[in-house]
Image (cartoon, rainbow, N blue to C red):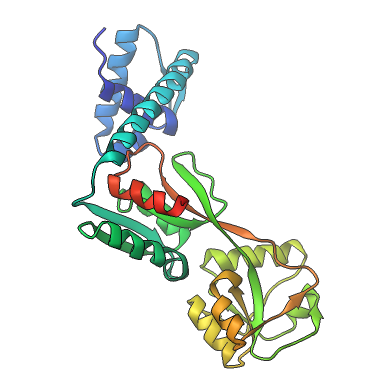
Length: 289
């Protein structure tokens, strides 16, 4: 039997995606190369691993057994490679990160400063996108680490929670009234644009209570929300953890709700099947500490 590790990697990608074409795209090889590799494996193992269908493939019983074991083996190999890379001293390299504007400024930036002080010879590239766009950047290999609003369900991506945040409403003037969600919907509201994940989370929560939010103003950034509230344009929905300075200075005041909006999580994500560079591993260490 003369099966090489690279062939098992191709099999693993095909088994995880259940698509020869998608496996080829993810591995940057041709679909015919994937098909040929699977045929060679099936011949070497003397068994059928996939059932070919018009809209993809499914694993046979033997294929399921092989996929389970190969997936575990490749994970062990990746872990070993990560440990070795983690020991390397960073005298060069590149750190590529994706995050939204608000998370970049209020959460990621302090870690980038620390990282640059520790590893000044590593170049840093930051790409600002929405959570859904960041997932696409991860899958296309344009970034190694992405910060996204959770939850996200994707078997090809590993996601670790790194921060819990609370969405609150604020206004310029102190307001001692405790609002119901229904009352709040009648107020002049300032929200992020509908394309943002943060806006989607808040909209979904109000919708679960049978309420629809109709803002009078929609803006494209968290800073603009704060400025609009400070200029008394309405009640703005902001992230409490990223507004602490303004709240402490009393330039804005939190609106009290009978039913506070549930907390949500932000996580960092990376491709499960890819070996992270030493730079990425060191940056994750900073976050975990």
